[in-house]
Image 1 (cartoon, rainbow, N blue to C red):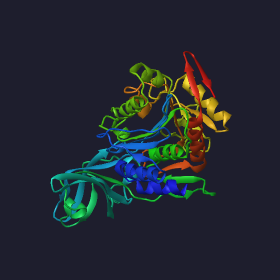
Image 2 (cartoon, rainbow, N blue to C red):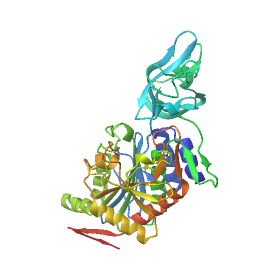
Image 3 (cartoon, one colour):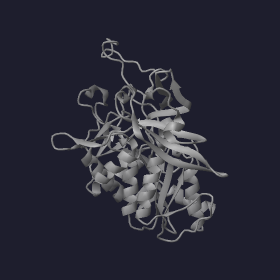
Length: 414
């Protein structure tokens, strides 16, 4: 758990998450590949490739289908605009827009880090590097004496409510050094902590979905070579629709799988056969029953913290789970002693969605949505039960080991 906490603490943005993930993988013997170069894959080899804020890692097998776990590396925060330093002569504030659907009132009066990616000119080259400020910034609330209705109603205007950068005039270059362009964010800088009478809860920024990304990578690192290729895909931009160059809606995963199939010597027909025999696990967290608001949950399918791995389903296709893929996961996990529980949204509220359904538009594979239950999703600090994370790690290790054979309307599990 301490390694997870370090990952959560230091992965301020998707770019930091990828950098930290790559370091984890390289310590475990994974070799870096580049999309711009030919790949020479060897049986039993372990590899990874990055694109922006996304990373795809895999253990290569020369035959067989794929076992894929997909998660995401981004979380709601504020993204700086160009010419972001806004000075009125007394204060400099940072002009930013909301990134994703944040629970914005929770970001007030908390330490925020300026972090992301800065593109610098080095001779005739442009070099992108990750950046995080040593300074901390704050988005200050209006005092209760000046906003008497704040506890009855609070509306956050993201154009007028801006983080303080300093007294007097401060430029972005003063903070980050010389640059040509940047992808910079204001993101929660609080450290993860254990809470509850027995330390049973973990509260941290970015649990959604860095807990899932870390679990998938950790499971892949610990996996043994099998007759099928094991893949952990961690995508950027899930919180804003996955439509970026490295998002789940891009060709990143499809390209990686095609290059693996090429290395295996598969024909196009054999590649399609392998995909139809594969399983994609879309991994993202779910809403736990909130003890103060139980009425917000479905009456018969209430996920709870401490209840184990959540299997998510939705009639409108927001989640990819169907009866067969739910049955596969239930059998594999319960046979291994992993606790599972169902999750549905209330039928009278709009469902959230995640990257599985978007990824399916590029690579159509039998798929299931799972995760762990948490509170305060999209808050500056989210909460989960740490023993659910242990169940998730066991679940992913079990799914990577499972031999699942699809044959029309039947599936064999070994």
